[in-house]
Length: 89
Image (cartoon, rainbow, N blue to C red):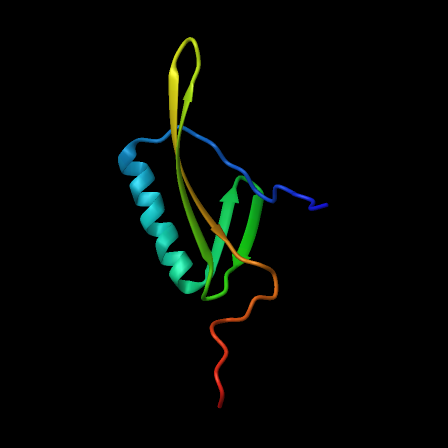
């Protein structure tokens, strides 16, 4: 059975412009292969391999009182995955 542990979580209201600015800065860090997330005294460093899995999901949740939409972007990789395709030297 798989065990899931949340290493870092943040949720706060932002304008569309603020979200776009954050995603641009995040994209630069992803390109470098290292993302450091900070909130107060909490900090985590993620080192990413060159090849990852990108998942995009749009959802609609309908309740009696209102309809809620979400757009999720998820990047996955496995510990110990190589830094790119296998080549012969």
